[in-house]
Image (cartoon, rainbow, N blue to C red; front, side):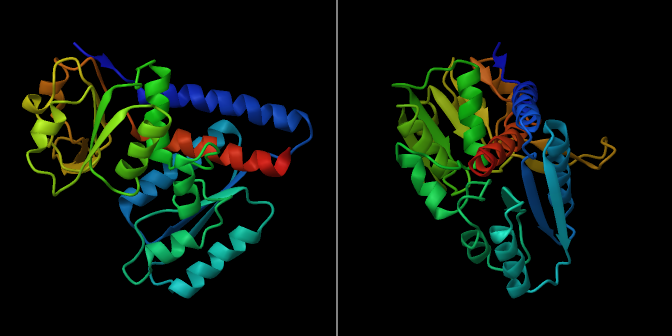
Length: 290
């Protein structure tokens, strides 16, 4: 039976560590770190995620500003709000919650965010710094995965790590982190990869970040592998009060008995994304406060 990697517990530990640092800053007469969050439209999942981030800010003692805009906001107006946050000295970091409406360019908005306030770690300057010896603000979800591996003392050096899903948000930056910081041998698979199972069966550490429930089956995982499930998909479920349940990419019930470590969905990587956002915000704030 696998050891369950409890992202909820680790994220709670991290938030306690951050709160202690915030309390120390305040004891020295400094203000608390301040995070701003922009959300556009009425996407239910987005509002749920933002609610989790607001709750985390309260837990660690951060100030926060929530900016909600109608789906009809123009790209020009949204960019103006981003510019204002870039220049506001009282705001240490901010995020623009995705997805955005179709008439707004995600790339244009993302790249207009100051790299020093980009606590999601999305902009090119921060992304590129992963390969340097002076990494800046790291992409939040991959950073969370790396933190889970560290805190569970899972060795990455010299290990075969296979990542399924090559997105710029998770797969691509995580591959760089595992290679640079983790000294692992990394295989990055995408939708064009032939015979995916042949690759995943070679993995000492297998990460799936696709968003396809049940993609990773028992026959695709070698015995004793560490399995990290980043995929989170809402699946209709009439037995739930909400009408849906969250499902990962991994066939958990059948893979868990043969894995050495495994993350559940929910409660695995998800809470770590918010914890990483808090870490990045504190890091950004320290440049202004110390």
